[in-house]
Every structure is written in structure tokens, then in C-alpha cells.
Length: 238
Ligand SMILES: NC(=O)c1ccc[n+]([C@@H]2O[C@H](COP(=O)([O-])OP(=O)(O)OC[C@H]3O[C@@H](n4cnc5c(N)ncnc54)[C@H](OP(=O)(O)O)[C@@H]3O)[C@@H](O)[C@H]2O)c1
Image (cartoon, rainbow, N blue to C red; front, side, top):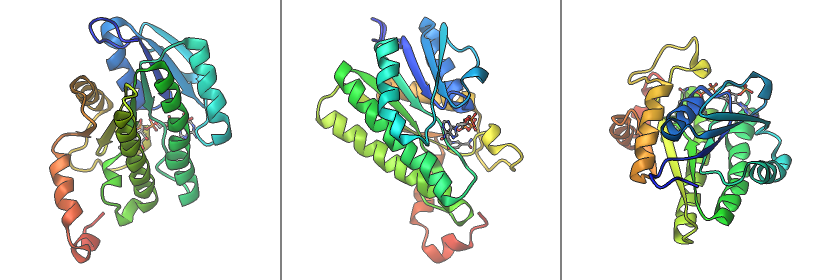
């Protein structure tokens, strides 16, 4: 449960080795040295974040385990204020990318939303991407997976708000972020850092925003991009 000042006391990061996920956890944990639970495929390789760090094994691709996984985390650690859905892959077959980024994300979010609804409060932060706003020829399997998860997260947020569940969903749409996911790639224009994504996310959360673009200028770039006629869009060099 958030304290009287609205600071979060417990954070669950799904994809607990994600550089963006860790930066967000660090930022949100700062004010009250919150308890951070890092859920990842490599629980032995996780770092210390926040006032106290716990680790738990989690595989986004193992959708059959998600319900029991979520029940176990909440039963073990009690109320959780913020859940960050941070795992993701950029490379691989369309099926691999879709399995992790879309199927894994919606599967675990469904279980998380149920549990947050039962406790009557909570925030879900979902790492979407500008890549989902208009799917590009250079990374259409990834873009389509992000378009899917973005749509699911928005619908989930609307549904929880309409039900008065006390649970809020924040969709984060970064552009190019310098992390191990993009290592070796040429930074795209308006590229940013995990810390900048974390700062923008914390600000958006405090405002109760439903969507945040990082950097903010990408919102306007993508409005233009979204409306480009297809023959023009197709000729763009990405
Ligand atoms: N970097 C960017 O430019 C960018 C831009 C927009 C959106 N995003 C999104 O932001 C999120 C975080 O990305 P990041 O930049 O922080 O990249 P990252 O450091 O590579 O983090 C992604 C993490 O996902 C984890 N993961 C992959 N498959 C998994 C699975 N089946 N189960 C559990 N964990 C799994 C990986 O963990 P392992 O250690 O187990 O491999 C990895 O640490 C992703 O959803 C990404 O799509 C990134």
C-alpha cells in the first residue's frame, strides 16, 4: 500500500534483468526505499535495487505458470503497489517475438490485474514502444507484438477504470533506448536512456497519465508518421 505521501512501498518487475525495468524500479523505489521484487529467468544474476530486493524465477514464455506465479508472489510478499511489465525481445522468429512480447505479456497482465483488483489498488506499468504505433517494414514482427500489447494494456486500463477497481495502467512508449537490447545498433533520432524513461514514467505516474511517450516529442512525430500515405511510408529508410 502506498504511504501517506503517495510513495510506493513495493514494486514487482517482470523481466527483472531489463535495464529500463530496473531504472524504473530504482526511480520509484527512491523516496521510501521501497521493496523491489525482481522476477526473471536469471534470478541469480539480478542486482540490488531499492531498500530491499527479492528475486523470483519467472519465464514470460511459460504462460501456463503465470497464474500460479502471480498468486505465489502476492501470497509471499503481500500487497504490491506497482507492477512493471518490462520483459521483451527484439530479435527472433515472428513466433518467438509474439510469444514473449504479446502472449507472455497479456497472460501475466491478466493474472496481475485480477490480483491487484482483489487488493483494491495498484499500478501496472507496461513497456510498449513507438514501434507499435505504426508498424514499420524493418521490424514488423516486433512492432506488431508491441501494437498488440499496447492495445491490450489500453483496454485493460479502461476496463479497470470503468469497474472502479482502483487499479491503473500506464502505457510507456519509448523510442530508441540505449540498453543491451539495442547494443550495436545505430541510435535512432531522439534516442534516450533508461534513466530518462524512468524519470518520464515516474512523472506520468504521479500525474495519473494513461500513456507516456519518451521523449515527449515522439508523440508528435508519430502522429505525423501514422497519417503518412502508405506509398510514402513504404519509401522511408526504416
Ligand atoms: N531498448 C529500446 O530501445 C526499447 C524501446 C522501446 C521499448 N522497449 C521495451 O522495453 C522493455 C525493456 O527493454 P530493455 O531496453 O530494458 O531491454 P533489455 O535490457 O534487453 O531487457 C529485456 C529483458 O527481457 C527479458 N526477457 C526476455 N525474454 C524473457 C522471458 N521469456 N521471460 C522473462 N524475461 C525475459 C530479458 O531477460 P534475460 O536476462 O532472461 O534475457 C531482458 O533482460 C522491452 O519490452 C522492450 O521491448 C525497449
